[in-house]
Length: 196
Image (cartoon, one colour):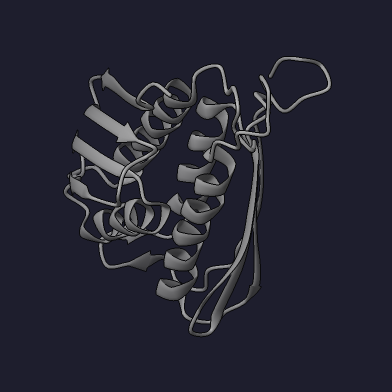
């Protein structure tokens, strides 16, 4: 099987992002976005999904965190799409119910090529450190649409905002790891249509 490694670069007047993702990695991560909590989330994503992630992220954080986080989501989604390429042999679907202390998050993914986000997380604070909690939804929206994935995130329990956000990123990582896993029983793509 060829290496499933992809790199994407995005340069705008607001952000400069260069991201490399190995979906068959071991969980290593090098990232510095200028938003420490976001770095923490991306590190959790890489480690728990066993992805190797190298991200050089520069954005106008002096304005706020929006452009940096949203554009990183766009680039990550494009990189996932590029890394799995024709999707031959992958399981396509991934799901997990992941606990983190008080938080319990369900994440389900279909790498169908059809973008959709169902987001049912509730935050009771506006910020976690320098991270705007409303950006959790914006990040996953950007990932789902640029990757062409169906993504559901549902909060089953949780009161601590840090735990809810971190649990969502880890759940996404585990579900994506499952969806991108190659199953040798699958010939071509896992679809009755013959294509995704």
